[in-house]
Image 1 (tube, rainbow, N blue to C red):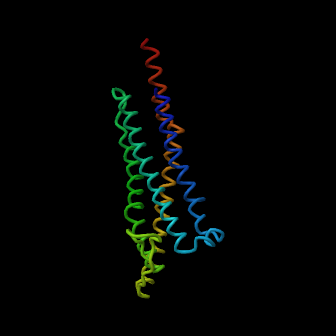
Image 2 (image 1 turned 90 degrees about the horizontal axis):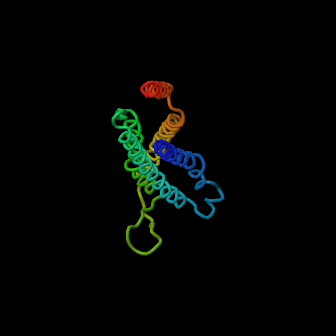
Image 3 (image 1 turned 180 degrees about the vertical axis):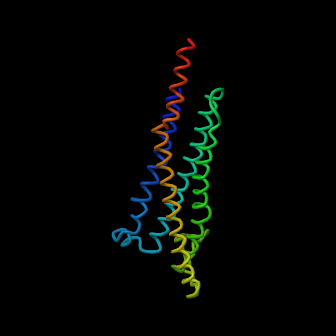
Length: 195
């Protein structure tokens, strides 16, 4: 049972880290390649990228919640011997908080500034196409362009921090620390002598 629970934790973090690497270094750039912008020029390519970004953040939410559930299940099964994994739960909590910051705060603002930059508005009702032209003043467009550039950089930095944290957590799950190995060894030794 313990081996299966460990497998679930490793599988979840592998999907989480793998999805982050895939989107960050491969999928995210596809929308801005010349061959793609020929049939989906700006602002359409950016809209598709933003839609994909929503799925990217959804991956973070799901995997983060599963990681916390995994830690709680592992603790519950080992309850009499184990201590509550405060550090690990806090670590995953920080990852989830960063994902929520990116998905619920930064990304919606980037979407607004992107629309202002390209002078369009997304319609919520009516027939397709779901975007309509909306003229903005030069000042609003320049302000939106500046804010978009700055916050896009911040978003990329947050994404990189999350990726590093995920890879570190993946490493810790696959390679338990030497202190955990010593504890396991001493428990086995005690069990051996108590029999």
